[in-house]
Image 1 (cartoon, one colour):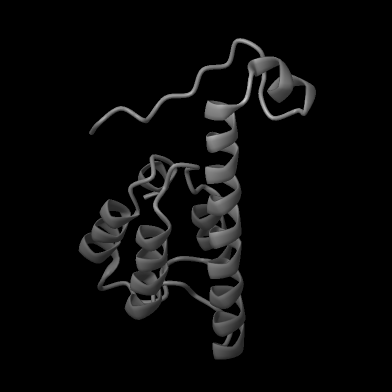
Image 2 (image 1 turned 45 degrees about the vertical axis):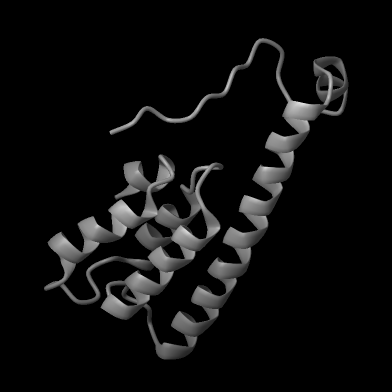
Length: 121
């Protein structure tokens, strides 16, 4: 699932979870869940990522210690994902519109670095 999340394909990651983990309630540790959330690709779609969070929550796969922890972590994760993806989108837009020298001086890009969409699976 982590590779799919990193590639910006959260719907496919949720399909994998539904297929392989649906019978193993609370089978994902909080640490593993944190790793999945922090592995989001910068080009992921916000609505798709939020569907992934909601789907995992509905399947009750994450082994939170209690309901309050689950509510807090889920609320914070939604906020963090929205902030991260908004910042990523802003940075990508700046990279298209600003000269390379300005981006380098501001610490937004690295000389000779090229980004491109992930390969189609």
